[in-house]
Length: 77
Picture 1: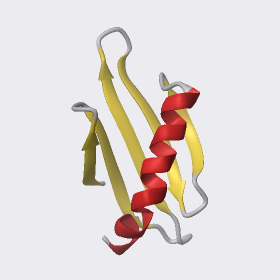
Picture 2 (picture 1 turned 60 degrees about the vertical axis):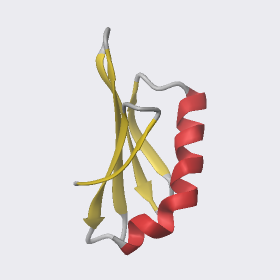
Picture 3 (picture 1 turned 135 degrees about the vertical axis):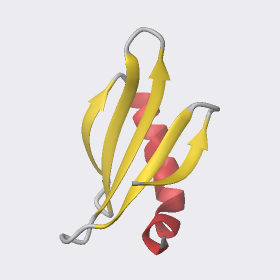
């Protein structure tokens, strides 16, 4: 996994290389004092979300907008 972006001061977005199936795995995590970490996985280019833990629907929607605006950069890297 490769670092890509840090938002809101403590939310990290990292990504994988291109996977054999043509997808890129994007992993998002944020430390949380009570839960340890909130995290979610998104697979591009379908924006298929999995393993969402601790994030609200609103946060996931925001992350999706961030990924949509930056997906071309992630795929190039």
